[in-house]
Image (cartoon, rainbow, N blue to C red; front, side, top):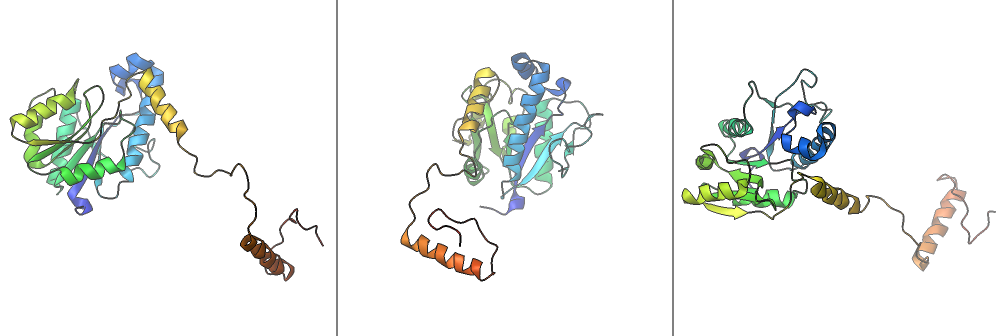
Length: 253
């Protein structure tokens, strides 16, 4: 893996306000609920990208009067590439990529927050595969992409509109092949654009094991464990450790 500064992850961030949410989400969930769903998805992808150790992070964000910074996302206020004029999502992508390469990145990966189950291993795979002759595309089940990885030499696949809407994974793949570039795919996943996909994500989150949980049954004590308890109690009687409640095997003295 290259040095961290050679790799860049790009995220497009939207303020948690109904007018900043895509019409697709508002149609699927209603304006107010779409804000909460979108914010959860943004928080999810931000945590994944922030914790990835082998890349810097560029956040493209159009600030608003109610949300002039990103403290609603991260109390540490990560800073961002400000969108200074109203522009399309594709223009924002191109501006962020240009900044990434201008500041020294050799490889850039754009991620979509609508795909909540992106794995760190997929990011490693993407950065390992990107080169001047290879573009990396992460497809969703609806043929859109959740990940696009490329170098500055490969920006030609983004020339012209239409590369980030609809069946964007297929569009970018076709453009890459027309430019005689190889395409590597990371594993397929899904995007949250409706109730069914949202339910799937929530069920997957709930199915994850808790970080800490008590065992259902305590295994029988082994001789070594019993000796450890005796040794522990000797220290308690000697005053070297605060006392513990008596065990069922031996009543208190």
